[in-house]
Amino acid sequence: MKQQITFDVPAALTNDEIRQIFRALNPDPQMRPQARHMRFFNPTQTTTAPIQLPRERIDPGPAPGRAIKTQFTPGAQSLLITYATNAPDSVATLFPLQKPVLSIGRRSDQDLVLAEATVSGSHALLRWQTGSWLVEDLNSTNGTYADFPFERKAQVSLLHGAEVQLGECRLMVVTFGPDSPHHDKAKRYLARRDGLTGLLVREHLMKAIDEDGFFAEWAEVPMQIARFELRGQNGLVSLRPTILEMLALRKAALQVVDLTQTLLLSLTPAAAGRTGPLTFVVSIVGPNLDEAQHVVEQVVAQVQGTLPETLELTATLVKCEPGRPARTLID
Image 1 (cartoon, rainbow, N blue to C red):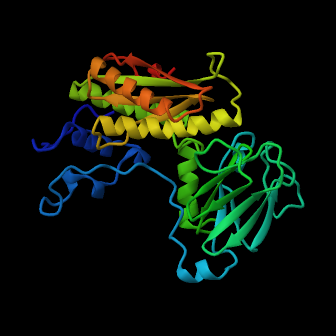
Image 2 (image 1 turned 180 degrees about the vertical axis):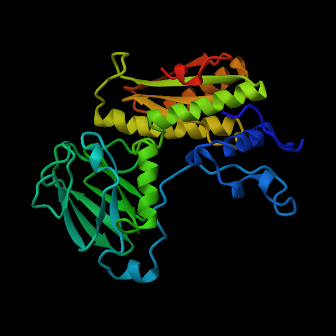
Image 3 (image 1 turned 90 degrees about the horizontal axis):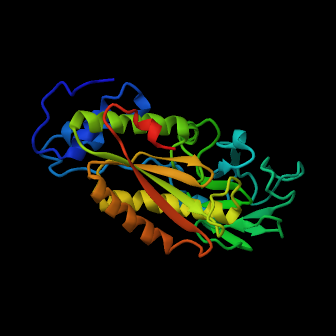
């Protein structure tokens, strides 16, 4: 691993921008931010203020044109599986939408067959409407859910880029086809990140956490790992989450990462990853232990108010010590 940045860094750059440069030197191409998003590599006449690096997301493809919105076009849109608890091999599978009305379920006679065990044999109907799709639940066992509400829905309207959850399987409306460049990019995203929460999976989390540890030691700044847990009414963390707990974890993880970055005025996306069925971690680089504790307490208080009353979000901070691999702090 690199021991130093071997060129002069302008004094006008913030500590977070230096961290961006440090990440850009990573030998793993997947860990490097794009230079066009960094002020150091942009002309000063066009970029004079710090730039916030965008958070990695699935690109659903270009928005449908007017013709597609007003008249059904076979194959113009597809459903992408982004998460499936019991069928992880099916993640990133793409179903082109060839008919204006399609059946979805686990049975082989359905138009779109989902291997996920929590999906009913005949779970829902997908019906094209002008500019959107309507998911109609067919009295399924485990329900149909819109993004973020916790209640089962009889119907869910889906616009371009929106997601729906059937049982424990998540689907996104996209405008690209199988094996297209957009599909390949989505596959890479879903290999690196958990489709439920958008957090890094363990292998890539450890790489990102180690990167933060190397930077913190090189820059001589503090680093902490915030460990978050979602606990049930019994005060324990379930190893087999309910659908309600899954939905709450998704909401909590997205909000925790966004709020942490906002409160820290971070220009670099936080290294954050899922460590268990209802646990995740977020790396905090720069603030000292007291400052980080204050941020985490604010985040937990705000996020808790958006979760079901039966669930509790808790957090603990672990300080990274020089010479200790940062990845050893995630559990």
